[in-house]
Length: 190
Image (cartoon, helix red, strand yellow):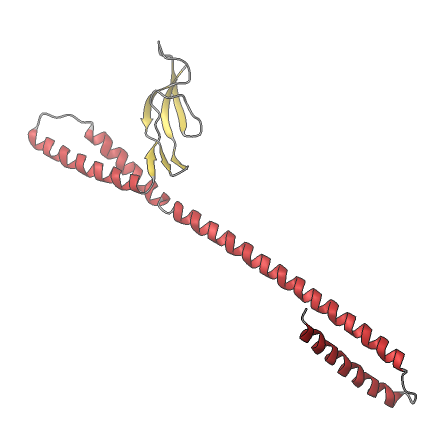
């Protein structure tokens, strides 16, 4: 606390005590002693100093709360920005799946093959868009089953393959950055 602040508080306390003393004079006929006035001033000053200290504590608490809120809101904004494409990605994945199934059809018809090439180009472009937004395919085929990124729908005993290995991917799974967007639906060896 600066010297000027102490002087201001002291002046306020002296004025307050002087006003109280004048009021008390009219009520009492005897004048207060100098020691009583000094003691009253010391008490009033101590009260004001305690009040100032309380105000400082309140200010520091409010400042800390504001800083914590600022950090929390920044973290929430960063998370929202990081996963902003999640809903759009979920909406696009079935389209990607359907296009992939359509491209598996083989035909001898040349006119149909031109359409297939067009679909292949659209499929590649769609894959590029979702990859640029941070969506990547979960690699599952011939990998050990991972319950965090895969969902086992079937099990099958297969000769020459150890237990717990994915032997077929029924539906591709996808990750959005570090979050699972859709688990891979797989068949696992027994």
